[in-house]
Image 1 (cartoon, one colour):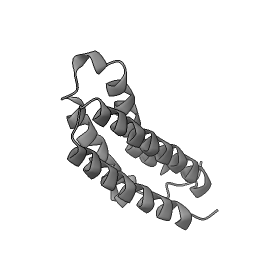
Image 2 (cartoon, helix red, strand yellow):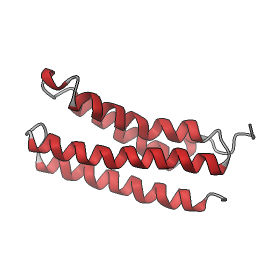
Image 3 (cartoon, rainbow, N blue to C red):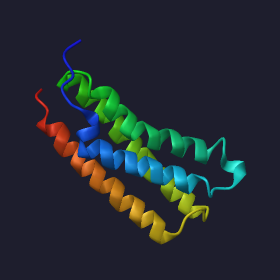
Length: 120
């Protein structure tokens, strides 16, 4: 294993990913209890995956780190779909949905830019 190349806590993508995860966690507390094993569980898993894969990947080589960022990005797109479903079920407002979508889109752009800066 190579030396640790990135301190994940200093990465803006980790900081924003953690912020998204915590905000989703707060939102999920308002969801109906019958969703706990379905939508709530899926959204929790996806949102936690976003910063978790950044921190795990940061200890790897740049090539491996890029793969962890791919997983993190996939989770963010999955979360976007789940937020649309939650909006359809009236678990959040259009305004809440748009705020999450903007924040997730900003995170995705930052993460793709960071990923492109890694050495191949």
